[in-house]
Image 1: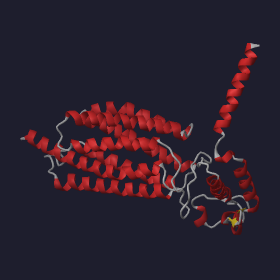
Image 2 (image 1 turned 60 degrees about the vertical axis):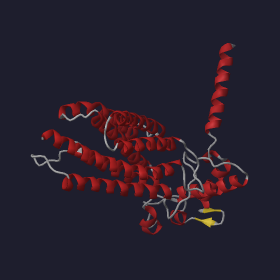
Image 3 (image 1 turned 90 degrees about the horizontal axis):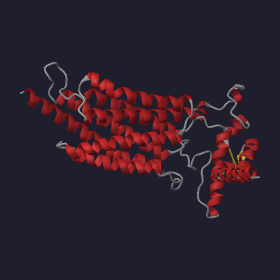
Image 4 (image 1 turned 90 degrees about the vertical axis):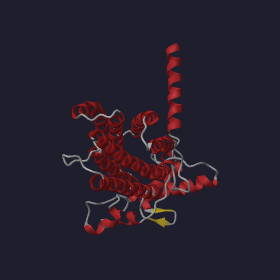
Length: 342
């Protein structure tokens, strides 16, 4: 008898959890009916969708050429079903807003409004700006090290972390490129590339923080330090791409690595006599605040600006200040080594 009660209790808890989990837009009967009607007729209310005119309910890329959509419509992979889901989502959210209800997620995503086919236009714009600032920072660092600072007798820069910062710049620009692509059109491939690029960048940033904070200069020592970090990040990326694309897990891993490197930089800034340590402190403080934005998830304001977009915006001044610190660090390191050589 007790076992039966226990089973009934567990079944009730399971049902409650399923109901709670199901409280999303894509399980709403009105939304589902709208999508079903749209797939059959190609229209949502008075609006008839261009994709459905070509595909008659599905994206016929294998049919005759005159039934296929033009390339300029297909390049973002919007098809009849995705368009139906999008416009039914907007219609349903307008109805919910009139009833005083808060926005909910549809298929795991907040209800964003497209601009020229771009899924999250504000995040795309800020990602592009971050890419531009990363490129500017890298170029200014490259010019400083190669054309303004003196070289050592072996025709190499005195600053021993030059190559590491070049790799960091390439990984950063790569991550912002795929961030812009993913926010432009969130499909499985773009999401995998975005998550993988971000994890690779943050993992390398952690490695770079360890090498710089502990002043690891010997090549063998650098390899020993890098091996476990590279192995962990590689395993995580393989897990995302070939086992399960777990967005929540990726955020946890990236936040943990980010906080660890922030701790390293903050402790080092507190003990070092580096002339630009105040810039480092500002970057760390701002980075912690921006990470909290990344964690805090809220529906997009007016359908455009969400926590992720604000995080991208917050990254702009931090990136500029960060590269300013890197340039100062290269000058400081070069001056120190020249004084020791004399």
